[in-house]
Amino acid sequence: MELLLPLFLNGVVNGAHYALLAMGFGMIFATTGVVHFAYGPVYAVAAYLTWWSVTVLSLPFLVAMGVGIVGCAVVGMASYVLLYRWFLRNDSPPFIILVVSLGLLMLITNLIGVAFGTNAKTVNDVTYGFYFIGSAVVTGVQLWQVLALVVVGLGLAAFMKWTAYGSYIRAMQDNMLMAKIVGINTERVSLVVFGIGSGISGIAASLILVKEGALPHMGFLAVFYAFLAAVVGGLGSLPGAVAGGLILGLVESLGVWRVSSDWQTTIAFGVLFIVLIWRPTGLWKGY
Amino acid sequence: MINNAILKVLDVSVDHGNRRVVDSISFDVLRNKILLVLGHNGAGKTTLVRSIFGLHPIAAGEVQYNDKPITNRSTEENVKNGFSFVPQGHGVFRSLTVEENLMLGTTHVSEQKKIRERLETVRELFPILSERRAQKAGTMSGGQQQMLAIGIALMQGPDLLVLDEPTIGLAPRLVNQVVESVVKIKETLGLSVVIVEQNIQASLPVADGVVILKTGRKVYDGAPAPLADHNKLMEYF
Image (cartoon, rainbow over all chains, first blue to last red; front, side, top):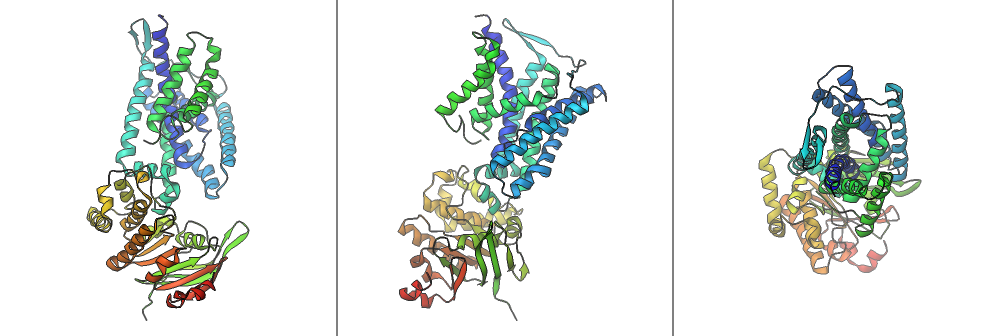
């Protein structure tokens, strides 16, 4: 039983990470209709830029994190402008755009490998504390991960509710044709959404860099979990992304209480199947 | 000489893939008048008005708005310049409230005074929207959603309003209510209106001019009076 608390806390921390990823991924899909699998390597770009800023430029971690976030937001926006926009303008079928995003995933992943090498990159100069919660130990980075989810979640909710661009995004998620009819510049809003969605993944990437380091293929698993959490929670829903991420994190973590950790991915898919049979559109709808 | 046409459609053709669905159609929309566009299902009415508004590319021909070419201009530019469109099938944002829907009609309006005035006008025309302003649009009846769709367009402050089958799917009582609203809007706000319809009975009496399409071609362009004779009307269908 004494394992339960650490497993629970680990589940919350991993869930917060998945939820952050799901927020950005779900926002991009629900607004633009693009299943942006290249979201994974774009997330990896942030980790590598943060690492490069810390180790090569000797920037303080928070500044380096900013470089990573802005850098991956720019890469995300570039992927929309240079690639997806053309296919969307030409009314390409969704599966064509899906194939394009998979191609982009491979391309960016390989470019990262070519630019930075395939060995793991770590930042050792970032110091953080250790905290006891009952019998469990939690690191400062893990607390940052949970805090990042809270801050980004509340900030995004306020943005969606109170700003003009937030209402345009909600309008596009509801009815793309009507959004065009009322005169919303849907391409400009899509660009902003790619920037925000990718930027959110950059926050998660910078924190995972401190915790686990960076590898060129780190984006594969990240986009996989982002996709799962977003679908379980309800694509495009902010509370859904949080719920989906936390459910995945908790089930996955608590699952290894009784079974081998080799089963973690299987458990995640099991959760997806159960939720989708129960609620085919995910747990949540709307903001 | 004063040109009385707010919109001129000159030999416009539209394709769907390799198929021509609208073929060399021309007509004028006169200021402060209601033009009725009729035709059976698949005649090309919706494709034509969507293309004129910028939602579908025009393959050939020209569209002029206030004597300036607007062929294939973006919907955003059209809305900014006083050209609004209400799509077929209750064009609303179902998950947003009535108030949020109306405010999305003011995407290009920065003056708060104008927004307040337009909101007041819409609420006077459709008092139900005022009562239901916090309600999600998707939970309202079909007739109320249609009023909201027209309300969104009016919030844009248009000079020209194009309505694509505004009475489709509505109960007969609501059909008359919607048509009466359109006439009231034209008269009180001085708008020019294009109504695309299949419901001839309700819309013909309020029209100032009629264009009839048949399989993508124009087969009638003139006054509504001769079409009051059912046999004459059926010649064009």
